[in-house]
Length: 352
Image (tube, rainbow, N blue to C red; front, side):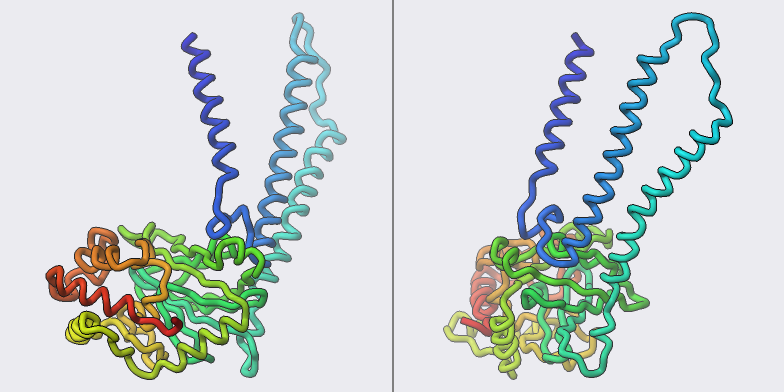
């Protein structure tokens, strides 16, 4: 009975694993590819899986046949096949063929995904985004558009978007599971690659994909998230134009927000910018750009985007992201000051 109970438990976990393997949201799952790069990687995953499952099935069938057909029934020594050229050729050639079957499309896909010649041309219409990773947030610069944003990456759909990746502290890894990747952001060199954000898949995902750090980088590694807003080219161009139009910090619209802006200018502005200019060098960007903070989808990349969660973050950032560099960088505010600061920050929008 104990043995039966153990097998029943194993079977239950096996079924549960099978069910969970089919779970996933279109904005996060690698099993629901939402772009050309993701499709290429997904096809390679399927190919390798088919090959592995095929090998397992063939070996299992041969094992079962041999087990029952050639069971020893007496003391006679069975016919020896040692040194059989035919068998040795078979079990040498088949693995080589399987290796080639997997290696050829893998190498081809690798070179295709690494082709970034277009972004390196002096005169090119390609959209290039400089990704800079920090503990524990992301910085996105659009060099040709001369704007910078933080935490929320905004991209057009149905075209190649090229990425220039680098870290400004420790090694991180840039990954948008549903769209493709991942690629390390190193401190000593720049990595480059491209992605395509499928418009139909983006609509299914609510035009919002999740991005993550995929390299262990510290106590808040699992919380180093960012969001990707994918939109048609016309909407993207409108967003860029609106961002470029912001030449100075947005003025507060209410008395409470004005109090918050005053508090912000007394301390927060030493690290956070509220204009999208890319004139500052990478090393001068000490914290995420807040020009369009009111339009973001998350607070600190992980909390719901509302005033209460924003106040929770401002009240104790260490509680939500241990080891973050914002902790103890600014004075402790009382509840009224937190309300005013949250009112001002939530009003920072470039598109109403």
